[in-house]
Length: 438
Image (tube, rainbow, N blue to C red):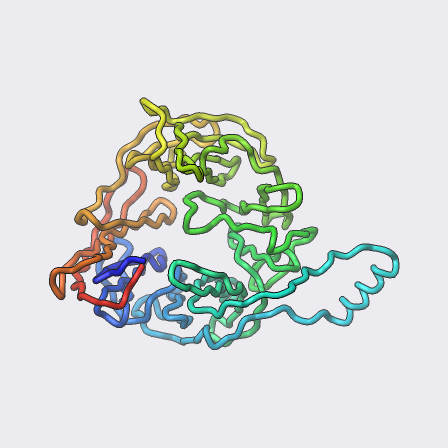
C-alpha cells in the first residue's frame, strides 16, 4: 500500500455526435467536475460539480446524458448539464432470485416422475458474505428502459472480494425503479447486453429481459472477457466472445444475436508460455500474445509477439509474428483499434497495422505524442474513427509544497493519419492531502 500526497485524474464519460463529456478529480477538492466539450472544435460548453463518476455514462443524440456519480444515477440535459432526475442506487437492496412459480414446481415434479434428471442445486456448507464497500456499474438504454448492471465488492487493503452482481431496470423518463434480478454482465452483441446467473444466459434487448434458448451455461462457468486487464475486442457487430469452464476444461463461446444462440470451441492450447487475448472481427477472430508469462520459479520465458487468425468454429487459419533481433520477455502488446487497413496494435510505443484475414503486418506512424511531463500517464477512448486521448493523470507520493499546478490535456484525434482535431487544456491545482492510499 502506497501513500499518496496528491493526485489529478481525468476520465472519459460519454460522447454524442455533438458533445463529449469528461470528468476530472483533484486532491484537495471534495467534489469532482463534469466538463462538456464541443466534439467539433473542443470548446468548453459547460462545467458542473458532482460526486466521483463511476464508470462510463451514456450520451444520446436526442440530448440527454446518463451517468452514475457517487452511487447516484443521474439524467442530465446534454446541452446545459442541468439535472433532470436523480436516483440513489445504494438504497436499492441486492436483487435476489424470485421463488419458483407454481408452474415451475409442477413441471419439476412431473419431470422427476417420468425419470428426467434435474441439475442438483449447489450446496453451501458455510460462507462468510463480505459487506459491500464500493460498487462498479455499466449502463444500457433500450426502448425507454435504462438498465444498470451492478457489481458490489468489498475492499480490505489490497484484497478485493466480490459480494454480488445484479441488474436494475429504471424508467428512462422518470427515473423510477421498476424491477431487478441477479445477473452478471458478460458482454455486448450489437445493441444487446448479455448477462448470466444461475438459471443461465439471458439478454437485455428492446427494453426487455429474455432467456437465451438452449443455453445451459451458469454464472459459475462463464467468465466475461472484458476486464480491466484485457486489451482486446470481444464484441463486434452481432457477436460477443466469452470464456466457459467446465468438466471438459476451458472453452471459448460466441453468442450470435441474430440467432439468439451460443456456439463453443475448445480454447487453443498453443503458445502456453504467453498471456493471450482476442480481437473479434466481422469475419474472423485474431488471437495475439499480450506478454510473456512469469513463472513461479521467477525464470522468465522469452519469445516474439505473435498473431493468429481463427474462424468462428475455432479453426486456426494463419499465423505471423513480429521478429525482434533477439527473443525478449519484457514486451507488451495492446490492441489500439482499427483504421482503413486493419487492426492496430501497439508494441513498445510502435504501432503496427494487421490485415485481419491475411495477417499482413506493417509498421505505421507513431501514436499522437503525449504533451504532459514525465511521471504522468495517458488513456485513450476510441469511438469509430475518432479517438479521445487524456494526458496528465498523476499520483504524487511526496509533495514538497502544499499546492502544485498541473495540466490535464484532452485531445481529439481522427484515427486515419493520426490527425489532431483539437486539444483542450485544463489547468488544475493539486493540493496536498493525507487521505489517499493505493
